[in-house]
Structures are given as C-alpha cells and as structure tokens.
Amino acid sequence: MSEEFEFTTRDNLMKDEEIYFDEDEAVIFEKELSLSKKKEIDIQKEDLVRIMIHTLQTLNYNEAAKALEKESELTLYSVDIEQFRSFVLNGQWEEVHHHLHVLKLTEENDQKMVKLLLYTQEFLELLELGKQREAITLLQQKLSKVAKNRQTMQSLTCLLMCMTPEDLRYRAKWEGAGRKTRLELLHNIENHVSPKLLLPKDRLLDLLHTGLYHERQHNILLPEWGREATRTYSIFNRQISIDESLPTLLSQQILIKDDELWHICFSSDGQFMVVGSKSGMITIYKLQNTRWEIYRTENHHGKIFALEFSPNDEKLAIISGVGKIWILNMNSDHEKYFLQVDNRVIAANGLKWINNDHLLFWISNSLLIYQFSSSQVINKRIFYVNKGLYQCVQVTEKYLIFSTQKRIFVYDLQRLFKPQMNTKTANSPKNLNHACIIQHHSENHIMEVKISPCGDFLLASYSRIDSNNGNGMLECFRIRSDHLESIRTYEGYSQLRYRVGYTFGGYGSHLIVSGSENGKLYFWSRDEGKLLAQLDDHHSCTNDIAWHPSQRMMATISDDLRINVYTIPTLK
Image (cartoon, rainbow, N blue to C red; front, side, top):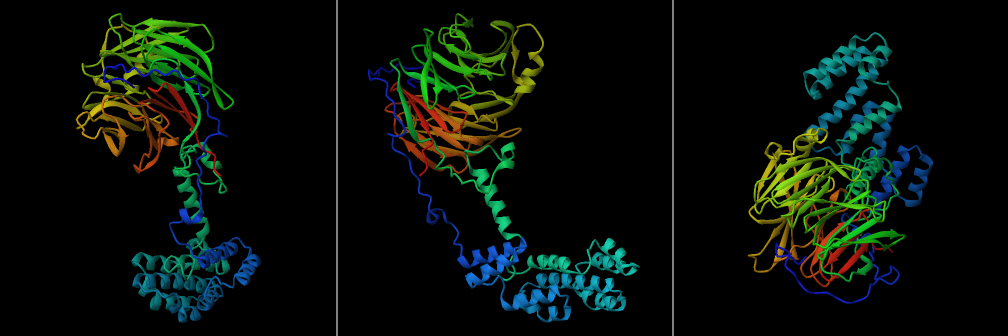
C-alpha cells in the first residue's frame, strides 16, 4: 500500500483490460512424490516382510503368514528364538531357562526382569496345580534373587494362602495356565529383548497410529487435531505435505480501473469477496462456480480504511476517510446506512464485528462499540485509550489487541465487554486498563499486529526504516495467559517505507504469508520458519492478503491494480 505511515500517494494507474487465467491454460505446479525423495529412514525389505508376517499372525491369519514366509523365503524368527518361544508356549520351564541365552540379554536389569517374569508364571502354574512345595522352593531359591523389592515378594507369598485355583486366579488377576497367558508373557519379555530377535506386539499398528497422528498434525488441509473430523481420518487418506497444499496456482486475475487497492476480505461462508480502494470504491464479487464475478459496487467518496463482514454475512461494515461507518445490507441491493462518527476525524483504523449485532471500531484514541437493531443504533459504549495507541486488530472470542511503536497490549475481551453488552449505561468513556492481561515490549518498531483466526497466535510486522537492505521482518508469538511466547521470525521480503499485506493461513494457522514492496509473495512454515514458496505475479507493492475460509484459496491486491486469486495446484 502506498502509505508512508500516512498513506502517501503513488500514481501508477493502468489502463489494461480485465484479465483471466483459466486453470487449463495456467502452469500447473506439479510435485513428484517419489519414495526416494520422501524417504528419510532406510527400510529394509526383510524387516518389512517380517513385520507383515508378524501382523498376520497377530490377526490370526496363520495360513496367510505361512504362505508369505514360504514365498519370501524369510522366517519371522530364527531357529533358536522359535524353539525358545515353543518351550514357553508349552510350559517347558526347565528348557526355557536352559535356552535363555538365545535372547542375548546384555543388561543386568533386563536379565533380572526376564527371569522375574518367567519365574512368576512358573510359580503361578505350580500353585494352580496344587504343587505348593515346589512353588515355595521356587519362591525361596529363585524368585527371591530377582524380585524387584520386598513388596513383590510379599505379594507372591500371600498367594500361597489361596485354597482353590479359582481363588488364586482372582487374587493374582491371572487367567490361568495356557496359551493366552504364556503369549502375554512373551509380549512382556519383548520389552527387554532386541526387536531384531522378538518383534514387539502390534508393531505395525503402532507405526500406523504414529504415522497417522503425524500426518494429521502436519496436514494444513485438514481441521486441527481433536476436532470432529479426526474420528473419520482414514488410513487410506493420502498425505498432503505442507508444500503441496499451498495456493500457488494463479487461477484468476482481475484488473480494477481505479486508484490503489488497499483492503480485501472474504465473507464467512466464502461466497463473497470485497475490495476497497484509496478512491473510496467498494467492489463486491460473488463466487460463480470457480470464478469471481462482480456482484455490487459502491462509491463512498473517501479512502477505505477497513472492511468487515458480520459473522452471519448479512452486513458489511466499511470505514471511510470522511468519518463515516457505512453498513451495507448484503441481502438487499440498495439498503445501506451510515454512522457519522466524528466530523473532526478523517481516518479510522480497526474494525471488527464481535457478533452479529455489536460492532467494534477504533478512532483516534477511543474504542467504540455500537449495538444495532435492524438499522438503528440502540446502545453505544466508549472506552478511552492512552495516546499513542494507533492500531486495533482482530477481535476473537478471547482477546482484543492494540499496539504502539514499541509495545503490544492484550486485553481480556470477556472481562472488558460482556458485562456491558446487555445493559444500557451512560455513554461516558471508560478506561481499558482493568482488562489488560499482557504488556509486551519490543526492541523493534512495530508497524502492525494480527491475531490468528483461532485466537492462539499473534503476528507482528516490524518496520526496518533504518535497515540498509530494506528487508522487513515478521515475528510470530503464541499467546499465553500472562505473556507472549516468541515462536519464529520471518525475513527476506522487501519492506522499507510502505505497509505490506500479511496473514496467517491453513488450518490451525500453520502458514505465514507476506507480501512485499516489490510485489512478491512469500510462504513460510509457522513453526519451522522454513521458506516454502515465493511468487512474483504482482508488479508493485502487495497491499493486502485474504485467506479463503475453505483453506484452498487466497486472494491478494496490489498497487498494480490487480486482484490475484490463487488456488491449490492440481497434483499429478
């Protein structure tokens, strides 16, 4: 935007016709997802086959497991390990202890734990058979040497008092001698043996669960982990990497024959897109199939400083430089009304619908909340803000945020507004200090701050007027209960004198997107800080960026008078 903190004029009008780019004609951003590129861990074929055999046996597909062993000429276990397992499953305890060396236990603790597990199973089976004398001998001569502590010995000794096998199984929480408890014994032994010898129980299922969780956490095209859609996330879903899910395909470009384009936003349902210009022209587009078509135009005869749809998309609020707030009825082609805020005010920053009836906006050093009923203002609240606070950003369910050149203030929205929304009180200004929960000091010159849609992250834009290279910088913070926790900084885009657009993107706000004075667009991974993509479709300063609610589309505006609409490329 051509604003040197005071909206400096830049004459760069163009006379071109409106231009469209069809997806069929555009260059498709292709990604070859070969295994060799994605492979970070070398997976041996033999190990993979063994896990498959093991899983088939776990699922009781024993014949299929045997067939795979025969065809692959691989066995799940070595001859020695298979013999050891056979001795355990058959309850041949003397042979089990004689062949214990095949487990190759090198750690003393592992040796003791495996012996404790084996002796305990043998002890219980002796008691179940009524062989108390042999059980006592085993307890005194062998179990006492490997028991972890005195409590373990006391628990085992108490079982000698059981009068019947049923009483023993109940007190020991044990299902009796047999294949089931002996298989469970082998599974417990696996925790102390190299997985190359004894495969861990449900290893393939564990890998799948871990992989799905990782995909679910890092797939920005899917809702955040823990939402309703999580329960339907399928093992068959193809993973979409963060690089692939960037809207980098220029699918439509629109030229507006007007002055500099300053603001752009989407409606909550994603069906409307509105653009405001320096001249006061408002152009509303409606999505028709896959294309944006002009739906309505308005001329407000003053610089457009803010645009905001109400949550239900029935109203569009507009702040113009003549001190008016215009409210457009989106359900009517002609109905609109305005609020004369202050004849002395020629500019206003910050506009947000708290809900469908309450509009918040920032003018000079005051914060105002208007409550509407139809087209009438039925209540007005005014909050005084100290001089120097110049920027009001998004309001979420939790926070309201202001910034000065060196400080960021976070206010508890519930504490500030809810008690006052439902009662008519005097319109005298109130102070905001009682609701301030965070005051953050910055070493850099803060131009603007934005809050993520989920309300958990904050993005600060820093001016680099004194920088020799003209590079701008963004910093992302996680909003904690009493402080801002810095996550990453993002540099490389050009910003020396003018405001450039930037925003969060993707589900969970996993992306950071920024414009540049040279017209380029930059995509970063929020948490890693990695530069993912760079686009150069604009020819002048990128003034604003809007991320579509579908998470699959993005729109940008520039001083080159173009609206660029980007979508996610078709994957080949």
